[in-house]
Each structure stands twice: as structure tokens, then as C-alpha cells.
Length: 184
Image 1: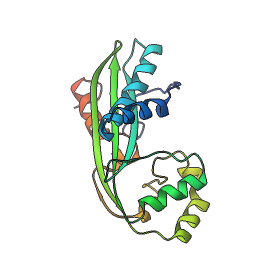
Image 2: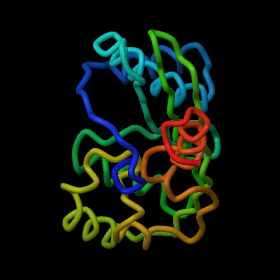
Image 3: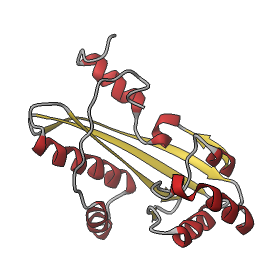
Image 4: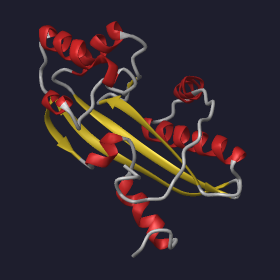
């Protein structure tokens, strides 16, 4: 997304235990929005330790059912099928967070919420979908990619397409314009 928007960037890998942070925050009663924000901030903070001389962006997503329960990334195909069965015919919220660090401090953050209604899916449809797309969705929260055939899973979506794909891009571009990094 950044490359398509002509945002100059480089990437770096960081070791970050998303599961431990998520579990700790759930145990403390944190809301899904706060968990998404904390995950994005944790990644940005970790990368900023390596690159304290530059602007660092961390992003993450959290998927929550209407009751606030989180749906995690599937570890295997069986978990993916179970997640899609749980989402079938249900509303859920996808929260996409981004945090920017500079000089070891958070300087900007955004969390966008997308409301999504998945259509009822048969087990046969889910099996066929996962047979054809497991490699592409195995790392995705919710086990779908809306920019591809995953669009067929939904009856209604309210919110930013970019947020679904992984980051609150429009607010980020706005901040980068304010900072003079992108033309205004």
C-alpha cells in the first residue's frame, strides 16, 4: 500500500510476541481497539530501538466479534475453517491500527474500525475456499483477503478498504503531508 501511494519506506523485521501481549491485555479486560493500538505501538517501539534515527511505523489488526471476543490468526487449516464457520452469517469489527515513533517516542497514532457482515457460508464453500486460498489467507486475521475472492464472503462492509488490507492509510497520508514528507 505504501509503495502504491508513493510513500518512501524501507522495511525491517522485528521479533515481537503478539500473542503474549494480546493475552495479557485480554486478562486485564482491554477493549479490542486498545489491543490493536498496543500491538501496533509494540511493533513500532521494537523497530525504533533498532532505528532511533528515523521515523518508524508499526501496524496491526484485530478482529472482534460483536460481543468483543477476538478471533486470532489461524495456526492451521482446521482453525481457519473453524474461524470462518464462526464468522459465517455474523457481524464483526476489524480494527486496523498504526503508530509512528520518532526519537524513541510515539508521535502519531490512528485506529480505524471497519464493520463487516459475512454472508452465511456452507461448510462445502469454506472447504473449497480454503483449498484454493490457504496459502494466501493463512497469515490473515479472519482468514480472508478482501482484495481477492474473499470479497465473496461478505454481504456488507462499512469502512475503509485500506484498513481492511492492513493499515489506516488515509489518516497516515494526512499525517505525512502535515509533516512535509508527502506533497500537499
